Structure formats: C-alpha cells, structure tokens
Length: 177
Image 1 (cartoon, rainbow, N blue to C red):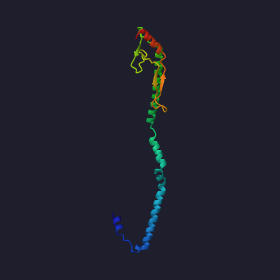
Image 2: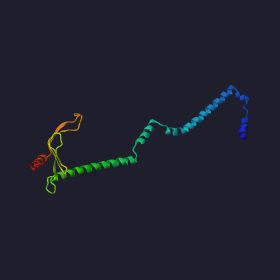
Image 3: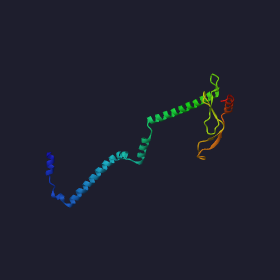
C-alpha cells in the first residue's frame, strides 16, 4: 500500500507537458501497444483460426449432428431383419395355406360336404366357401383393379372363375343345397 501512496505523490514534471513531448509519448505508447497486441495475436492466431466457425466446419458439425447413432443403426438393422423375417413367414404361411387348400377333400370326417353357399353378392351369382380349408370358389366376374397413372379410378377386367367352381357348383346342385 505504501508504494501505491508513493506513486500517487509523484508529480509529473512540467517539461513533459509540452505538446511535442505529449505527441511523442502518445506515439511511443501506441507503437508499444500495437506491437504487444500484434505479438499476442501472432501467438494466438493458430488457436483462433482453429476455433473459428467457417462454413466448412459448420457443415461438418451439421453432418455429425445428423449422423445416426450406434443405437439408431442397430435399431434400423433390427427392423430390417424383422421385416425380412416377417415377409418370409408370410410367404411360408401362404404356401402352407395353398398346400392345405389343394389337399383338402372338402368333406368332413363324417363324410358330409364341407362347402357352404354364399349368396350375398350384388351380381346374384353364388359363391362357395369350404369350412375346412377356407377356399373361396368364385365364378367368372368383373373386378375393378387398383388405380394407376392411366386409370385413376381403376380398370375393370373380367376375372376367371376358380378352377374348382364348376365342380363344386355341380356337386351342390345335385345334393340340392
């Protein structure tokens, strides 16, 4: 504290207070500050350059931010595996259903016919449904296909009858159903 009091007591000599002396002191101080600042920035230049936000760095940061995490990658891979497995199971189930339908005798073990008539269609043509294998026997009929670019309301086509429709219809007609 005594040094601070002594510095306050020091008086500026009147010979230094001339305009020429003040200009010299100001120029010398400015040059010293410029030199010091230049030296500091010269040393900090690489550091400042490395932390500067350039468009390339911003793009890289955005790319890293949007990149999927390991958990997201694992989740996506698991979803793909599960989807493939589901598709394989669905195809296997469809193949098994077709095999069962092809092998079905359309008779109960008691010998009774397992095919029933379905009459609630607008064209009034009977359809038949096997209670054992779920085969649906349809006649030749009009079908409207799914819409596409050329046919926005769908395309009407004639669908062929089920391969066993005539046989089942004949059997049921002779049985009087």
